[in-house]
Image (cartoon, rainbow, N blue to C red; front, side):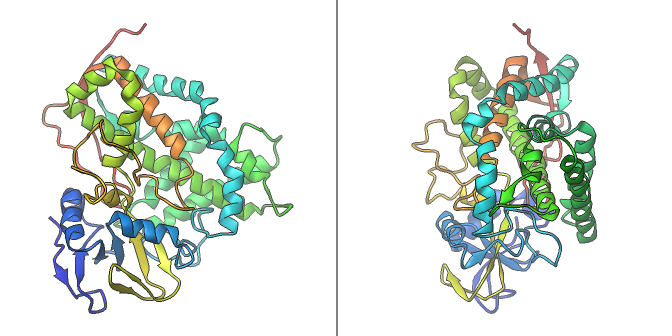
Length: 405
């Protein structure tokens, strides 16, 4: 388990729990380490990244709501932005953030996504069709990892599979948290690919059903947006769409493989799936940490935060805060409410939350409809990646293909 002792090393002489977030040890003892740290203080010091790390739900809410003090404009990774391009709109504050969200939000409403549900269901079915005859699969490689990208590029961005492949390679480099030089090359490569896509779409006939074209031809204050800003928006959509939903899906499938009674219950009562999705999102929130930067000296949970210091907020930690959720480590369909923190809070709350919910629901429904007796493969020992998004490295399962209607 990660050492979460009370210590004054690395936090300017202040006593607080210490964590080492970007380590294999922390990934393997993730929730246990967070519970130990949170019991001492809702704010810890992350020795591996040299920043504060918020584990308590109330303190996370405080930081998320106070963008004037804890700004996203310096980058949302654990290290400050170093002059490179920003990911819009997540790495901005009002008023620019508000302007871009007003442009993008209409594409991610429940009503707008309902119109794309048939296409998304078809894409999910193609993946299930490919894996069902074998009776076994790596659910990360064969479904959870590639599916969200296919949905995003085909159903939302209206871009090609070749475009998806180029972007996927760059995102994989950008999340290599153990090698900063590889990360930097991945971010640069992603922006370069997205710049090419923006340029190509700028010269094409606009497609009103394409979010890419919506971004490319957007206007703010009556003026066309710059190519640079359109590239940044597209890069942010790609980065977010390829990483987090797949992580949540993989963990949800692992849970069902370990709990066949729940799988049977959801098959018999599919109307319970939306509730199950919310509990999966709470229990297996992918977002380990997103950062803010202190605009001036501040205080959190009795700790002094210096101007310029990075403050990481952990949605995954907040979603298991026992002060908010009774029996936080248990999956419960009977929770009195589902106000969780999986998608964040405040103005920077996840733009794609409704899309993530829809993809998770349709995917899990399809798996339960088409694949019976879902179990972990003999000898399988699922492990989680190290980094800012908590996702499985692989998930080997066995199943029985069910007859389709």
